[in-house]
Length: 270
Image 1: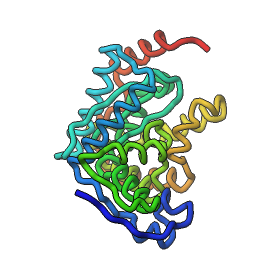
Image 2 (image 1 turned 45 degrees about the vertical axis):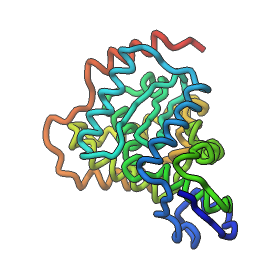
Image 3 (image 1 turned 180 degrees about the horizontal axis):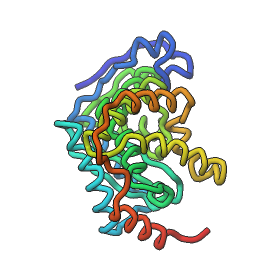
Image 4 (image 1 turned 60 degrees about the horizontal axis):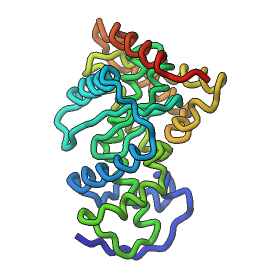
C-alpha cells in the first residue's frame, strides 16, 4: 500500500494538538491499520529496548504484566496482544508505543504508595492504545511533514523514524489535550470494571505534584507527555464523582508492596 500526500505545512502546534483548523481536520486521521501498527510497534520496541536498560527480574515483570492483563481484560476485546515491560529507570514515567506495547519505569513502582496508583497510570496508557493515539499521531505527522510517499506495512522503518522524531521511543510524546481527555475517560471507566478504585487516579496526580516539588527531574518525562493540567484533574474528579462505585474496590495489595520493596532494593542509591 502506498500513500500519496500533498499538503502545505501547518502551524507548528497542529501536529501535537487537536485544536485549530488543521487539528480539527485530521484529529481522527489514521493511515495505519491494526496489522501495520503491530508491525511498527514491534520495530519501535527494538529501538526502545536497545537504548534502555530493561528490568529482567521475573517477579517484577510478571507482576506488571498481570496487572496490565487484568485491566486489558476489563476493556473488552482488543485487536492487540498487550505486552507490559519495565524500564530500569528511576524516573516516574510510563508510556505506550502502540500495538499494545506499554513500558513502565521502575521509578513509578518505587514512588507509588499503592497498587491503585500504578493501575491508574496503566489504565490511562491502555486508553491511548484503545483510542489508537500513537497510530493517529504518526499519521498526522506523516501528513504534516509533507511526506509525498509513505510505504506502509512492508516498509515500517519510515514510520519508526517518524516515531523517534515525535519522542515515542523515549516516552516524551504529547498526544494533545483531546487525546489526553479521551485516555482519562477510558481510565475512569476501566478501573472499576477491573476491580480498582478510580479515586486512585486522583491520588496519583497529588503524588506526582508532590514528587515534582521534591525532585522535578523524576517526573519531567511524564509531565511532558501527560501534562497534569488543573482542567484534567478537575475533569477526572468530576468523572469519578459520577461513577456509582461498588464496595470493595482494590486500592492496594500485598503483592504490590512486595514488588515495590523488591524494586527499591534493586534500585541504585543516588
